[in-house]
Length: 340
Image (cartoon, rainbow, N blue to C red; front, side, top):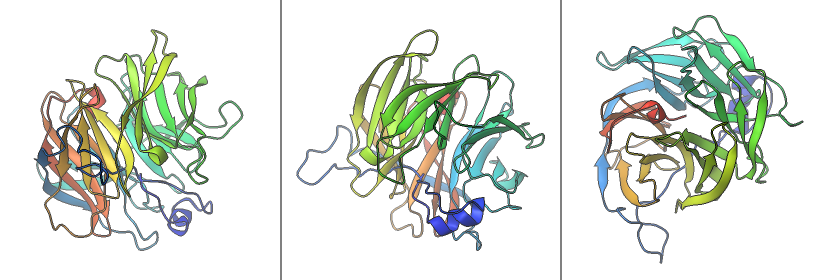
């Protein structure tokens, strides 16, 4: 998620100046003087579906994130900067092209949403307050799933991924406001009772997704414009870690990550309304672009691919509002295709 002015976030959280970032962007041809990434000349054209939100006068922004499909195929997403009383979680009817709010509260600044495979509830990361909350699928029955320090330090939870058993994995974007490499990956057991730091020393951890086989986690590090890979053992512990992909983003930064059935990565980009697509070996396959000349849209934060299908829905935001765009993904959607 991209950097949000402190005044805007203070209006949302009533908690003073906290910095958020709405994740990353990348150029299609690489940096000046460097060869273009493999496949960088292939473009996937995205078309507008609908405008979901307008800029909120009280916060000066709108920022869509966390697209995820429920068991009935309805798309849910969050508006990070929605103030108290306005929808913070929305349910989109893609056939009718309508959206309605299903949850709001007085304090949350939610940066991601995912449905648990264990209890079917919707889980939301509250970046500003270091919490994870859950609701029923219809937005009712809000509960605090996890709150408090992990290994003695507060969290800034950004994106969410679940393993097959319903244990929750978080990208903890600590160090973002200071530029220090203090980001972490945190695993929380499905009962919310135990939190474990799996990796630390990361550069403003942002996107997080399991690979297609649940053998490891893809992690985007926003302030270094790189994607790291964490190999996991059967118990969910990290056995190895390495930099997998370096993203030549220019002024843009890496945001959320989704993975399709073939293992391809869809890397959201902030600072440019586009996404970069890689295969699991790091080869650049394509760039997803909105129509040239579209004004007032700055970032493509996230994406969800229809379960069992290839229709992808991308969240795009800027001064013109919060929008959904659609494109044809390279492979079918699976659970990991709901971006963070």
